[in-house]
Length: 145
Image (cartoon, rainbow, N blue to C red; front, side, top):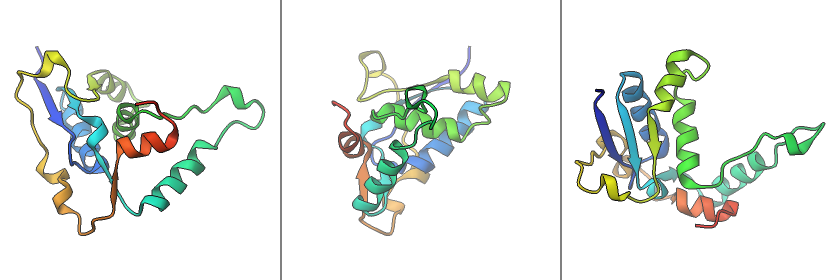
């Protein structure tokens, strides 16, 4: 049986957390990320919102109903960020992505497990106080949390 990790995303920088988790997935471990809504994106609030609004507007010109479809919920945004760190077009990347589970909050079945924090992704490493959580971004994008 493969080793399972439970990683806490609270006060973790989303990109650094995503790269750390992707590395563990490629090593063959199963990873559960909890508290996804509390992960942090650094930068000015207005700039982050503008960038995501612009990204949400992209659609196919021939038929906008065909996509691309963009994620609004915090666990989906974090999951997609982790997928971006994996070689998803190769078999090993797809297999690694299948070993990933991202949760909003802490599910009942994971409450009594040891939860790991990633010191390299800590928000304390930021030199700026400008940041937003994934929950704030999701609310701005229209998710019903």
